[in-house]
Amino acid sequence: ILASGSTYRRELLSRIVSSFEVQIPGVDEAAVKNSGRSPLQTACTLASMKAAAVAAKHPTAIVIGSDKLVDLNGVILGKPGTPEQCCRQLTAMSGQTHRLITAVCVQTDTHSFEFTELTELQMRPLDPAEIQLYVERDAPMDCAGSYRIEAAGIALFSAIRTTDSTAIIGLPLLRLSKILRELGVPIP
Image (cartoon, rainbow, N blue to C red; front, side, top):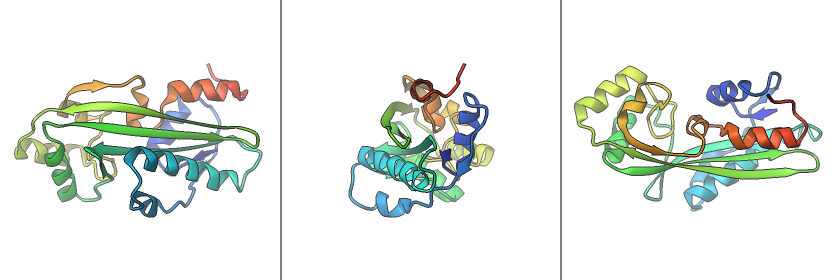
Protein backbone atom coordinates (compact mmCIF):
# COMPACT_ATOMS: atom_id res chain seq x y z
CA ILE A 1 0.00 0.00 0.00
CA LEU A 2 1.35 3.41 -0.96
CA ALA A 3 0.52 5.78 1.90
CA SER A 4 0.31 8.88 -0.26
CA GLY A 5 -2.07 10.89 -2.37
CA SER A 6 0.77 11.98 -4.66
CA THR A 7 0.24 11.16 -8.33
CA TYR A 8 4.03 11.48 -8.75
CA ARG A 9 4.72 8.74 -6.18
CA ARG A 10 1.99 6.56 -7.65
CA GLU A 11 3.58 6.79 -11.10
CA LEU A 12 7.03 6.06 -9.71
CA LEU A 13 5.93 3.01 -7.73
CA SER A 14 4.09 1.65 -10.79
CA ARG A 15 7.47 1.48 -12.55
CA ILE A 16 8.61 -1.34 -10.24
CA VAL A 17 5.42 -2.84 -8.71
CA SER A 18 2.59 -4.02 -10.95
CA SER A 19 -0.17 -4.06 -8.33
CA PHE A 20 -0.65 -1.92 -5.25
CA GLU A 21 -3.27 0.09 -3.40
CA VAL A 22 -3.13 3.77 -2.58
CA GLN A 23 -4.40 5.23 0.67
CA ILE A 24 -4.13 8.81 1.83
CA PRO A 25 -2.74 8.69 5.38
CA GLY A 26 -4.46 11.81 6.76
CA VAL A 27 -1.39 13.10 8.62
CA ASP A 28 -1.31 16.73 9.80
CA GLU A 29 1.80 17.75 7.86
CA ALA A 30 1.57 21.42 8.82
CA ALA A 31 1.79 20.60 12.52
CA VAL A 32 4.97 18.57 11.99
CA LYS A 33 6.52 21.20 9.71
CA ASN A 34 5.81 23.89 12.34
CA SER A 35 7.14 21.82 15.26
CA GLY A 36 10.68 23.21 15.25
CA ARG A 37 12.29 20.04 13.91
CA SER A 38 15.15 20.28 11.43
CA PRO A 39 14.22 19.74 7.78
CA LEU A 40 15.77 16.25 7.88
CA GLN A 41 13.90 15.32 11.07
CA THR A 42 10.68 16.72 9.60
CA ALA A 43 10.88 14.62 6.44
CA CYS A 44 11.73 11.45 8.39
CA THR A 45 8.95 12.04 10.91
CA LEU A 46 6.37 12.62 8.18
CA ALA A 47 7.38 9.51 6.22
CA SER A 48 7.12 7.40 9.39
CA MET A 49 3.80 8.93 10.43
CA LYS A 50 2.30 8.32 6.98
CA ALA A 51 3.37 4.67 6.95
CA ALA A 52 2.20 4.12 10.54
CA ALA A 53 -1.21 5.71 9.92
CA VAL A 54 -1.98 3.35 7.03
CA ALA A 55 -0.28 0.31 8.62
CA ALA A 56 -2.54 0.70 11.67
CA LYS A 57 -5.53 -0.02 9.39
CA HIS A 58 -3.75 -2.77 7.43
CA PRO A 59 -1.41 -4.55 9.85
CA THR A 60 -0.45 -7.39 7.48
CA ALA A 61 0.34 -5.17 4.48
CA ILE A 62 3.61 -3.74 3.25
CA VAL A 63 3.09 0.01 3.61
CA ILE A 64 5.27 2.67 1.98
CA GLY A 65 5.29 6.19 3.41
CA SER A 66 7.38 8.97 1.93
CA ASP A 67 7.93 12.68 2.29
CA LYS A 68 9.92 15.11 0.19
CA LEU A 69 10.84 18.64 1.12
CA VAL A 70 13.15 21.40 0.03
CA ASP A 71 15.72 22.68 2.53
CA LEU A 72 17.04 26.13 1.63
CA ASN A 73 19.60 27.04 4.28
CA GLY A 74 17.57 25.37 7.04
CA VAL A 75 14.21 26.74 5.88
CA ILE A 76 11.61 24.32 4.56
CA LEU A 77 10.06 25.38 1.27
CA GLY A 78 6.79 23.56 0.73
CA LYS A 79 4.35 23.40 -2.13
CA PRO A 80 3.75 27.00 -3.18
CA GLY A 81 0.04 26.77 -4.06
CA THR A 82 -0.03 29.97 -6.14
CA PRO A 83 1.96 31.39 -9.06
CA GLU A 84 3.01 34.32 -6.89
CA GLN A 85 4.43 32.03 -4.20
CA CYS A 86 6.22 30.04 -6.92
CA CYS A 87 7.91 33.23 -8.09
CA ARG A 88 8.92 34.12 -4.50
CA GLN A 89 10.41 30.66 -3.88
CA LEU A 90 12.30 30.61 -7.17
CA THR A 91 13.63 34.12 -6.52
CA ALA A 92 14.90 32.99 -3.10
CA MET A 93 16.59 29.92 -4.62
CA SER A 94 18.08 31.73 -7.62
CA GLY A 95 21.86 31.25 -7.69
CA GLN A 96 21.69 29.13 -4.51
CA THR A 97 22.32 25.49 -3.68
CA HIS A 98 19.53 23.75 -1.80
CA ARG A 99 18.94 20.23 -0.52
CA LEU A 100 16.05 18.06 -1.47
CA ILE A 101 15.32 15.59 1.30
CA THR A 102 13.32 12.49 0.40
CA ALA A 103 12.51 10.24 3.35
CA VAL A 104 10.96 6.78 3.09
CA CYS A 105 9.50 4.39 5.65
CA VAL A 106 8.51 0.87 4.66
CA GLN A 107 6.49 -0.83 7.39
CA THR A 108 5.23 -4.39 7.78
CA ASP A 109 3.86 -6.26 10.78
CA THR A 110 7.41 -7.43 11.61
CA HIS A 111 9.80 -4.94 10.00
CA SER A 112 10.35 -1.23 9.59
CA PHE A 113 12.87 0.20 7.13
CA GLU A 114 13.67 3.90 7.06
CA PHE A 115 16.04 5.77 4.80
CA THR A 116 16.64 9.16 3.26
CA GLU A 117 18.05 10.33 -0.04
CA LEU A 118 19.70 13.73 -0.05
CA THR A 119 20.04 15.59 -3.34
CA GLU A 120 21.98 18.85 -3.79
CA LEU A 121 20.65 21.12 -6.50
CA GLN A 122 22.46 24.22 -7.71
CA MET A 123 20.00 26.64 -9.26
CA ARG A 124 21.49 28.97 -11.81
CA PRO A 125 20.91 32.71 -11.36
CA LEU A 126 17.45 33.53 -12.71
CA ASP A 127 16.04 36.89 -13.67
CA PRO A 128 12.39 37.79 -12.98
CA ALA A 129 11.35 37.30 -16.62
CA GLU A 130 12.80 33.76 -16.68
CA ILE A 131 11.03 32.93 -13.44
CA GLN A 132 7.70 34.22 -14.75
CA LEU A 133 8.12 32.34 -18.04
CA TYR A 134 8.96 29.13 -16.20
CA VAL A 135 6.00 29.37 -13.78
CA GLU A 136 3.62 30.00 -16.69
CA ARG A 137 5.03 27.03 -18.61
CA ASP A 138 5.17 24.33 -15.91
CA ALA A 139 2.62 25.64 -13.36
CA PRO A 140 4.53 23.97 -10.46
CA MET A 141 2.09 25.03 -7.73
CA ASP A 142 1.91 21.46 -6.35
CA CYS A 143 5.69 20.92 -6.30
CA ALA A 144 7.92 21.47 -3.28
CA GLY A 145 10.40 24.19 -4.24
CA SER A 146 8.28 25.40 -7.18
CA TYR A 147 9.88 23.32 -9.93
CA ARG A 148 9.16 20.19 -11.96
CA ILE A 149 12.57 18.64 -12.53
CA GLU A 150 10.99 16.06 -14.86
CA ALA A 151 9.71 18.85 -17.13
CA ALA A 152 11.04 22.31 -18.07
CA GLY A 153 12.30 22.79 -14.50
CA ILE A 154 15.50 20.94 -15.40
CA ALA A 155 16.62 24.09 -17.25
CA LEU A 156 16.65 26.06 -13.98
CA PHE A 157 19.71 24.18 -12.69
CA SER A 158 23.44 24.27 -13.34
CA ALA A 159 24.24 21.13 -11.30
CA ILE A 160 22.46 18.26 -9.56
CA ARG A 161 24.17 15.78 -7.24
CA THR A 162 22.18 12.66 -6.35
CA THR A 163 22.52 8.90 -6.07
CA ASP A 164 18.94 8.30 -7.26
CA SER A 165 17.21 10.69 -9.66
CA THR A 166 13.77 9.29 -8.78
CA ALA A 167 14.18 10.77 -5.28
CA ILE A 168 13.85 14.21 -6.86
CA ILE A 169 10.37 13.34 -8.09
CA GLY A 170 9.35 11.89 -4.73
CA LEU A 171 10.16 8.20 -4.28
CA PRO A 172 13.74 6.83 -4.46
CA LEU A 173 13.29 3.59 -6.37
CA LEU A 174 16.82 2.20 -6.11
CA ARG A 175 16.80 1.56 -2.35
CA LEU A 176 13.05 0.98 -2.25
CA SER A 177 13.41 -1.81 -4.84
CA LYS A 178 16.06 -3.50 -2.71
CA ILE A 179 13.87 -3.39 0.41
CA LEU A 180 10.78 -4.66 -1.40
CA ARG A 181 12.79 -7.55 -2.89
CA GLU A 182 13.98 -8.44 0.64
CA LEU A 183 10.31 -8.53 1.68
CA GLY A 184 9.49 -10.94 -1.12
CA VAL A 185 7.88 -8.52 -3.56
CA PRO A 186 8.62 -9.63 -7.16
CA ILE A 187 10.53 -6.80 -8.82
CA PRO A 188 12.47 -7.09 -12.08
